Image (cartoon, helix red, strand yellow):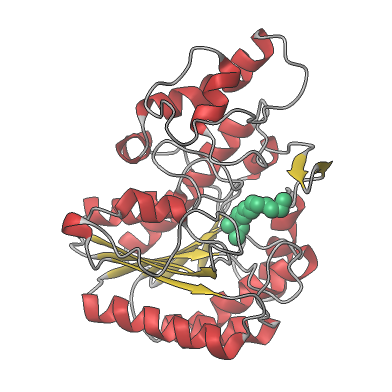
Amino acid sequence: MQVFFSEEHRRHFPQAELNGGEFVTPFERPSRVEYVLARLNERGFAPPVAPGAPDMAVVRGLHDAGYLEFLEAAWDEWKAEGFAGEIIAASFPARRMQIARPPRNIDGKVGYYALASETAMTGGTWTAALSSVASAQAAQRAVASGARAAFGLCRPPGHHAASDMYGGYCFINNAAVVAQMFRNDGADRVAVLDIDFHHGNGTQDIFFDRGDVFFASLHGAPEDAFPYFLGYADEVGIGAGEGATVNYPMLPGTGYAAWAEALDAALARIKAWGAETLVVSLGVDAYKDDPISFFKLDSPDFIDAGRRIGRLGLPTVFCMEGGYAIEAVGINTVNVLEGFNDA
Ligand code: OKP
Ligand code: ZN
């Protein structure tokens, strides 16, 4: 399985994440991918290939124009305002406020386009986010050209990014871009399976009213886990998208038996729906020692999960999402890929 990866991810390395009322070193840090690269190499995967420039047409097709302009210009505007720190959102359009009027002021714009305040931006964030989606796109092209599967080692991740919102460490929705590219290439039915611990609110939102892209997510129940405000089981899509979204929220302490049951249910839904190609939002933060999650999967469970996904028999693009127990991120991620390969 070919791996696509860009060193440009390093341009995104904020020093701070707001966590429990203090600033900590971000959980989503550059070294995460070093562990994945090392494990891929150890397990005999071919060296990763650097992607070319991102295809912005697809990105612009899914993301709001004002949002993309904001991401690109945010750092310069933040500096011009005289702010000394990293970009952190502080004021949000909450209930009964104006949710359709982006302010002129950069501090206001940041809050307008953010869905949470843990995610800081710096001068290199936009470049890194573009390199991340470029890796996902290169993986899609490999599969579109006939490969059974490919892996976009994306950083920063993407599944929390909606058309016009960043947060949860995400800026551009890599998995959604890949799904759209398969559609543009002629696949009538594309499925996104999100096995990251956190609900893929961005991906769900982007495809919620569409009947051509199925979205299935296994995640910590919204009552208990970020992103808190989406991911309930009764969210099933709307309009043409009704029945093309399925959520499997699970409670703190969920182990592999229950999780695998949800995975099988999700895979059965994807199969019954008639998906022709599959995009996997591959987060490995369902791991028992993940510092910000509460499922109890062990490393070998990820092999079994990969095998189950592989048995679906669909052309598949994996996009890296979360996973923060950094020494185990490489093992767990590559376990999914190897399980898939052995299916
Ligand atoms: C991104 B991905 C700890 C809580 C952080 C944001 C989590 C984002 C997860 N400060 N909340 O889905 O792995
Ligand atoms: Zn996650």
